[in-house]
Length: 115
Length: 117
Image 1 (tube, rainbow over the protein chains, first blue to last red):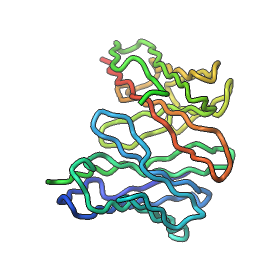
Image 2: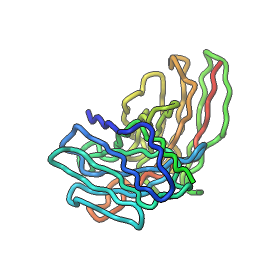
Image 3: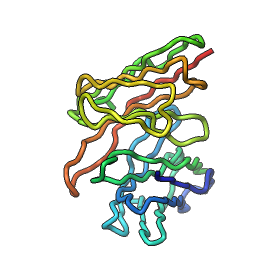
Image 4: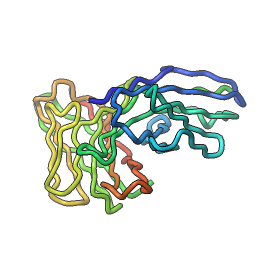
């Protein structure tokens, strides 16, 4: 089955700096890679996702890049703000196959943005 | 918020008792999922269902059971066979398959924190 590794487990930055979180996956059939943000005590919420036919996607201060050959994808947050502090999870899924919808999550990254 | 609900928010049980967690959605989604979240760990898939009257085991199904009799509902039973049931349980739903242009976002409920002593 799919295995997703996420690094780092904790990340501390100063407000205004950039933050990068990296994930690797093992199943070459995976074609959908979402990123979720979970604030303390709350539900995870999708912040950005990318499909395997796209190498990069950007939404304001957030971007995701995908390298299918190396089987890794990364989340980039620019101009970080204290409200970006949360746990971030990457995930991978093989949509269109027999197990579509089955997301495998990384272990999570605790991002702390210091004012 | 809204669209997918879980109840109760907190649940306490004695060891050896079965307990059922509720999950309801009004998003007209075919697919529903149950995850378990432990401190410092990612979300691990317990069971998922792509359509009514059908469900598949996830990565950690032992000690759990589900049913999917209605599109809107996907209850999870934590049985006494689950060796370490204390955790935060999250339910989610999504579309099943809508083509390459569709969004496959999984919408999560607020979660149920189960404590077994």
